[in-house]
Length: 399
Image (cartoon, rainbow, N blue to C red):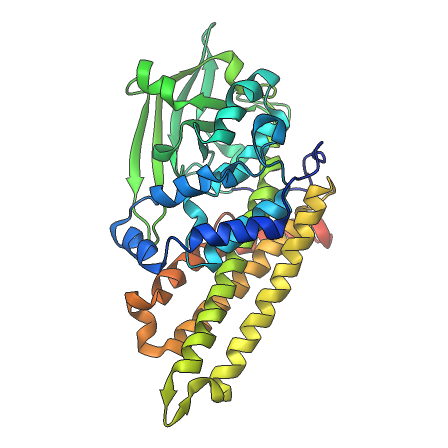
């Protein structure tokens, strides 16, 4: 994905009806029904956590950002982020459902009234899911303006052809957002890309073969795919916003994505430090708990402080986002700091457990693999450093 700029959506019209602490407690109660064993088995078999996602859906937690007038909770990013943090802090893995939160911005901010009226109530009730964003391409990578998947208008429909990677949860969703090129030589490279909303139920009924999926097995249980579009027909009323302006709409969602995934990394960081303390306090070697040794104690304390600091930055970013203020720098820095802190905490926790850290029954090795993702996704940390260097500190661009 490309680096986010300083944009954020307008302030929500309605004040949230639920506080962050209420949502934390609600999420924590659901997570308690899905212990480590559940996540361990899903990871082992690379299975989608359907039961857990269903439980969140029934409590409307995946409709957190949908306005109350459509049946959602009507909260901001600050509150929604706490849901994802609690999932990861409980030992779960929010990657199976976070898409419905960070993709919602494009629909809410730029979808037509007809699209909102038709789809938002179903998304709020759980009848429908919007879990998947099809943007990234193998050759373009973070250079989103260089994507080659095309959409051509044939007089009645837009016809999409091309190849995408990292299209996650497409097999577990009803609605899909696809970014495609609609102009070859636009006036500016950020123009000429259009965002489409695709109803996969209609595709299955009337366009068999138009979408080809190839599952991608990764080091973590992440339901991702390569996708090939073979002349997929999309009605004009399914264009999100204006034709040619899709890149801007994608950017609007990237700050939300960074804040939400920073919350996941923070949740992981707390999980690692909590587990390291618990294990170390109860692990007796040479007649005393290993956390009495400063060589074990100090790294855990240091990792915890860094997680807390990262937590503060992502909270600042979320507050700015919800207030409709520029937050690109804070969203990027929050993700970077959270990713670094969670990775340090992961290594400290692994060290504290010693050989038991690589045994699956302790879950450290699973969470270790999962939190490594934040170093490279949704954006590589070096891209964030480049963003801060050029957009915040005024240094010359290096690419």
